[in-house]
Amino acid sequence: MDDSFDVGARLRQLRREKGLSQRELAKRASVTNSSISLIEQNSVSPSVSSLKKILDALPVSISAFFAGDEPSHPRPFYRAGELTEIGDGQLSWRLVAARRPDRRMSVLHERYPPGADSGEEMLEHEGEEGGVVISGTIEITVNGEVGILEAGDGYYFDSRLPHRFRNIGDEECVIVSANTPPSFSDGGEELHHG
Image (cartoon, rainbow, N blue to C red; front, side):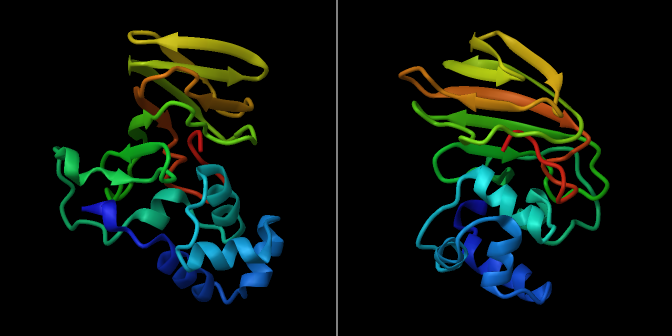
């Protein structure tokens, strides 16, 4: 299960592999030195947008960060417990086939508890993304345009436009989404809404 993933140890491992001090990584990512230290100690759980800034500075993609060893033979089916959690501890984004080599799209099962937010900073990255709300309500802002979507509603937009996801309702919002290229997983400069 990916629920026991050690974010701090993984960040420390990747930072050391790149030969960076905590101070240098913090400078590159435009975050405080203490932020890197606290994350590596697992004292704080970074938001998806904060983690993206840090990983972009390495550069390492989100899925490379969370992925383990690639399977020798890609398989077609994944049980719920096998999806890779790449959320921030508040919102949950579970990636299908995270370790599949040469994956050309990202498929996510997203859960936003009431008040959950993809981050104050608007996100921008290469590609396109779309999804369907399964339950609950989500406010999506794309390039200044705000949409409030409910169960059965969908979205699709150019990911280079600044965007943000926020649960403004009082119940959990569940979304199934996809994006291509698989930016949540394949390049430090690219990321799904995170």
